[in-house]
Length: 136
Image (cartoon, rainbow, N blue to C red; front, side, top):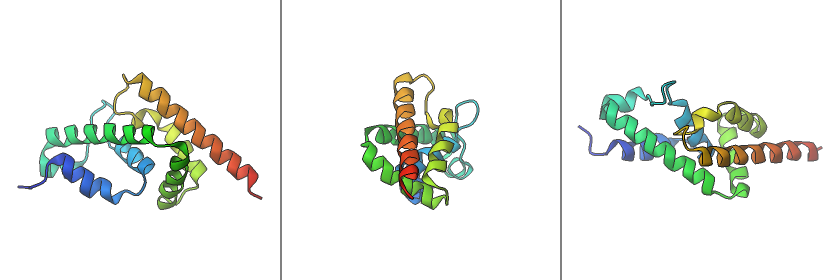
């Protein structure tokens, strides 16, 4: 038996080990199943499938909201941090996120968040592309 709730465990242990807000969003998106649910075998083993899935959906919504509230200038730095950990260029990292866009959303029905996130990723991609052109 654990003393932490599934959500607390996910926030403190699992997401605490992921560096960068964008990386957290990408990670949570990678846990989504094709049916829209979530799967993390370790959390399911410790907390049960239902509690784990509820915690992952909640955390995914929280992280998406945090990304959407963060100024684009701060997200530029976060993109560098997130991409360095995965050993990718920032441009490649953001393009990969754009390709996996549907996974990044906790709910496909939230069209306002989808449009907002799309605009954030497009802006980051364009900023990275312009930075690459400006750097000799």
